[in-house]
Image 1 (cartoon, one colour):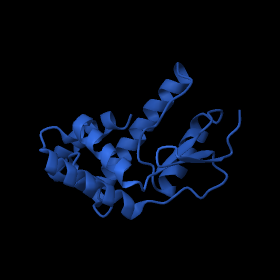
Image 2 (image 1 turned 60 degrees about the vertical axis):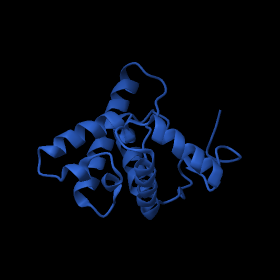
Image 3 (image 1 turned 90 degrees about the vertical axis):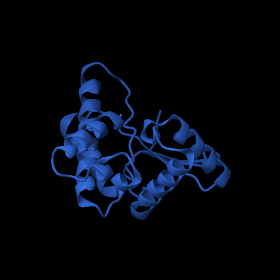
Length: 168
């Protein structure tokens, strides 16, 4: 759900003086030390969340905010935004942890082949870009530790599952 708003925000950035390379879907767009792209990612995430809430409050019953909410601050913002607008919506965070190198490589190949983020790139360039993007995420990643939240933590694509505050 974040891809469309991210594209719109990236297009907006091109006309606002942000380096087009930094505003692209390349790894440097996900660099947390680049304040301009941090702002763009936050704006894209906010737009995606608003789209999700608009849909949920008018016609939907279940929605997935498919985004990298890998920092506690982002999860708090999501929680507060939903509670402020529609406190009756139940929120479930899903955290995926994978350290199985074979699974990671398979996932990388699939993402490079199927994601529009890598269109026009050769396989090697796309692989390097994806690995750098992941390093950027890892540099700021914070596991879910707030046990007041409902969450599911998947290890190696469900070889182990940990749940917190899951009912029903």
